[in-house]
Amino acid sequence: MIYFLIKGKLVHNLTINNLQINTVDKNIVLFEIPDSKEVGAIWFIAKVGGYKKAEIGMFTEILYKYMDKNFGKEHTVNPDYCYAVDVVSSSRVTYSELLKKEVPAILNRTIAEVNGLLVPS
Image (cartoon, rainbow, N blue to C red; front, side):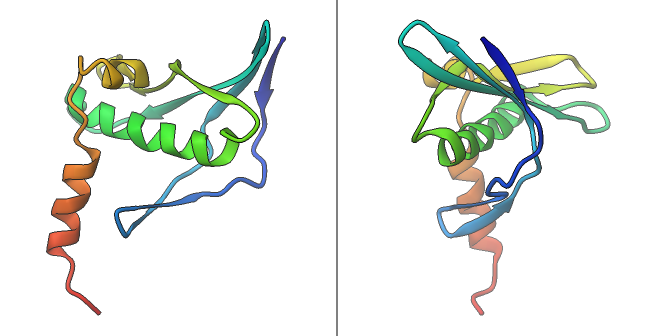
């Protein structure tokens, strides 16, 4: 059975390496396969000129962390069905591609760079 989740009271902030990242509701799908309750999501993104694969992967990493934080206790976040899609280029990156290192994972490096630019308060 497949359920499309309507916006709910979900955590919209993630803190990764001391950097707060605000997210918005995604297109979330809950589904059941024999002996497993799973969840997946699609995040549609756009930028003039499109994103590079690694940049799309960064959104996918954030999406996976978001899904795990909000659904991981009761559902398995399926890495094949957790992905970001660049609507300009029609390119997509699944979390499975990141796990298999088919696309470089740049989120932690990017956050470290941003943190290096921030002035301590």
